[in-house]
Structures are given as C-alpha cells and as structure tokens.
Length: 279
Ligand SMILES: *[C@@H]1O[C@H](CO)[C@@H](O)[C@H](O)[C@H]1NC(C)=O
Ligand SMILES: *[C@@H]1O[C@H](CO)[C@@H](O)[C@H](O)[C@H]1NC(C)=O
Ligand SMILES: *[C@@H]1O[C@H](CO)[C@@H](O)[C@H](O)[C@H]1NC(C)=O
Ligand SMILES: *[C@@H]1O[C@H](CO)[C@@H](O)[C@H](O)[C@H]1NC(C)=O
Image (tube, rainbow, N blue to C red; front, side, top):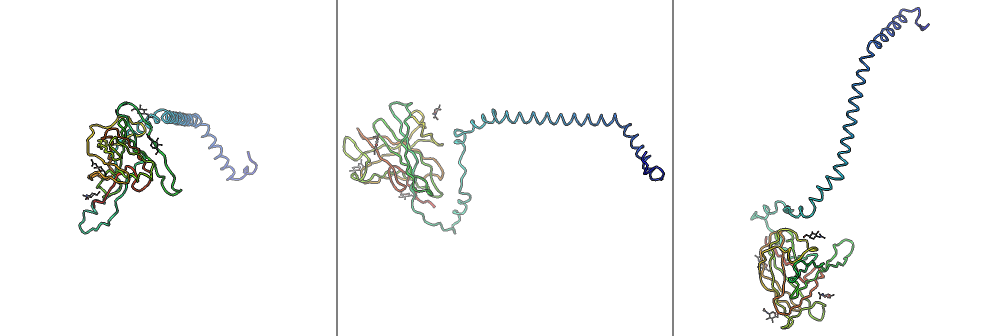
C-alpha cells in the first residue's frame, strides 16, 4: 500500500480502482492470449502470402516475362499496322476554303540497299553500309550501293514520307563519268537498261538477312530504267499512300550489264524515291 493515499478517500478509491483493473486483467488473460494468437496467425499468414507473391514476381520476371518479351520483338511488332501520325489533316484539307501551301518535291532516301543472288537462292549477302557524320545535330548520311549484275539484284524498300506527298517516282541519278567512281557497263555501251519490279511487301523487310527465297511474291514488272552517266532517270509516277512501304527489285535487262552506283548525298544521288505534292 502506498503511504501517499493511505488515509484519504481518493487514495482509497484510486487504490480500489487499481485493484479492480488488476482483477479484470487476470480474468481476461486467457482471452487476451487467444487474441494475440489469432493476430500472430494473421500476421504470419500475411507474411507468407507476401513471400509467395515476391517469389512468384521474381519467377515471372526471370522466366515468364522474358519469354513474353521475346515473343513480341521486331517480328510481331512489324506486323502491327502503322498509326497515322497526321491526325485529322485529311479533314482539314477536305475543306475547300483551306488553302494548302506549296512544297517542293522531297527526295526519299533509304539507309540501305540489299543485294540478293538469283543463282544461289538461299545466299545472304551482307549489304554495304557506310555513313558519314554531318555534325552533332544532324542525322548521318548513309551511303548505299545499287549493284546489279547478271547474277545480283538490288532490293530497296522505301516508306512514303510526310503527308500529302503521295505522288511517287522511283529515280536514279548518276553523276557525269569523269566525276565519279560509279560504274555502268553493258556489252552494248554505257547506257544500261534495267528491269524494275514491284514487290508486294506489306511490312518491313529485314534487309540484313535477305535472300532471293525470302523475297515477297509475286513480283510485278513495272518498267525499265535507262541509266547513263550524267543523267537522272525517273520511272512513271504512281500514287503512294503516306506511311506505306514501297519495295522494288532492280535487275539487269541488257546482256552483260554491270551497275555499281553509290548514293551518298541527301540530294538526288543514286537510287531514291521522288515524292511530289498531291494536296
Ligand atoms: C506526279 O509527279 C510527276 C513528276 O514526278 C508529274 O509529272 C505528275 O503530273 C504528278 N502527278 C500528279 C497526279 O500530281
Ligand atoms: C563498287 O564500287 C566501289 C567503288 O566505288 C568498289 O569499292 C566496290 O568494290 C564495287 N563493288 C562491286 C561489287 O563491284
Ligand atoms: C535470318 O533469318 C532466318 C530465318 O529466315 C533466322 O532463322 C535467322 O535467325 C535470321 N538471322 C538473323 C541474324 O536474324
Ligand atoms: C537510253 O538512253 C540513251 C541515252 O540517253 C539513248 O541513246 C538510248 O536510245 C536509250 N535507250 C532506250 C531503250 O530508251
């Protein structure tokens, strides 16, 4: 008994209260232990659940997710249709009141032109590709080679650039003979006739892993190109949908032909697509 409360009423009351609480504590003891046990079981269950979740996440990340990711790499992504980045421009240009500005034709260059062999149908020829840097702020200029012989064909795949520039023409520009290393030859002289084919490729071709047997079929002969030094030859123009792929094969038409033309500029040089305005 605490001497401070011994002879006062409050002291007695306080004391009896303490005793009172003490009594209840003792009476609740089995119930409390039961509560604690239930709580521990719940906490343990949650801890186990979290551990299982953790491990299944790690497992998913290490094994399953990698598998999913590799399934949706380039091949499958290439099959997805392109979304038009030029939202609602069609609606704008349909308005007869809307005056469109005039744009110069654009030169559409490809980063690489691939070669395939029409004699060895499985052969994959590593395409020539070199680029020169044009300063830090601009994209590099890729050099690509149009090589055509009686055995080799060149494959070029263009994606139609911009909006409303849907008048396309496959073109070839060769510099004058004494200013270039480009080489044109046939048994009949310096003017080479090439066959041009349209390939029905709806998707991007892997030009770094291409052989004759992998080319999309059936090919359609769309005309000839008459190539000579110091001249630009343009194929008849055709309508080309913005963002679509246009894929061509170029082969020899003249006997003993040999063509080796390097495109190395942003401007008209070698094989490129010439696109002019249609809106
Ligand atoms: C397409 O462009 C060519 C020049 O490459 C031009 O002669 C022709 O008139 C144009 N066609 C259309 C429909 O704009
Ligand atoms: C094409 O010409 C370049 C030089 O302009 C030369 O280095 C290359 O070997 C030639 N390629 C073929 C297949 O003749
Ligand atoms: C090239 O394509 C073949 C199938 O056509 C494929 O098996 C091979 O892995 C590809 N090679 C590369 C380097 O992509
Ligand atoms: C090809 O072009 C050359 C020179 O431009 C010309 O002499 C020749 O007749 C043309 N050939 C054909 C088949 O158009």
